[in-house]
Amino acid sequence: MAFDPSGDTASPLPRPDRRDFFGRGGRPFDPNWPCGARLAVSVVVNVEEGAELSIGDGDPCNETVHEVVEEVVGAPDLCMESHFEYGARAGYWRIAETLDRFGVKATFSASARALERSPWMARDILARGHEISAHSWLWERHANMDEAQERAVIARAVSAIAAAAGSRPVGWHTRSSASANTRRLLVEEGGFLYDSDAYNDDLPYLVEVAGRPHVVLPYAFDTNDMRFTKQGGFVFGADFARYCGDAFARLMAEGETAPKMMSVGLHLRIIGRPGRIGGLEALLERMRATPDVWFARRCDIARHWRARMGLPAFAPAERP
Image (cartoon, rainbow, N blue to C red):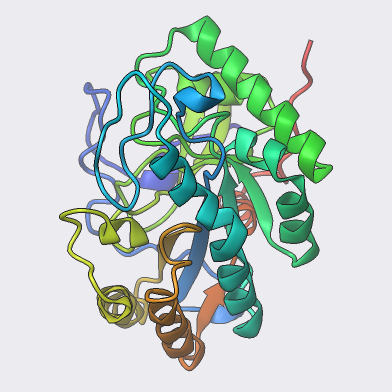
């Protein structure tokens, strides 16, 4: 069957603009989540440790955001590097064990250089039944990359993750802003089922790219432990649990007539700290005590969405 993008968003209005402000126009849409769930919960764990920009690793500049916001210019930032190392050395284990305890399968969105330097983590993530998706080669923006550079970065990320994990990623998420070419390059690469480079809805949707239907799974910056960083609003673990819990309660209520999806964003070096991990535990305990919730990896949500839209199972495109 031919792909008709209007069958997903069902917008009755013309769209002369490259941006879609209408979406579904407030009309309920039933995604038919498995077992009649009222909410699909997607836990995303970002793995960036070792992929942050670092002069000490040969990068042109240092990352400026960690436990503080500070820029060290012209010299290695050993303080920043050490904060990122904490995520792999200690934070990963707290998060992985917490997810296991509550029986939650997550998507680990991994910058490829991070897994190249910690292949033990890739193996452990998959052994626990989680998904590994791609978070570029380095933890960096794509907004200013030219097309040739970005195509090479995508290929390098896929290759490095496949080497560390034993299988390639089918999902993608760019730090901050993607470029105008990112989504097309992902589709042209041929092996990506979905991307998460959007923040504009509470449900997945389809877009047509290079003549092919492509799933977009919106992500979220509010239900996200990144708000523990400077001026983010979270101080105590309970702040994270309360805010995310309020979002969960609202979406569950709406899910009685219009089921939705909720993204929960985590970072090894952030929620993995001992003073914050309790917030994740409290949130998962609340969610697990609530019926009609589907905890799913993003690859599973994307596959379900294709089926819901009447599309065949995803098959990688043949590459020259």
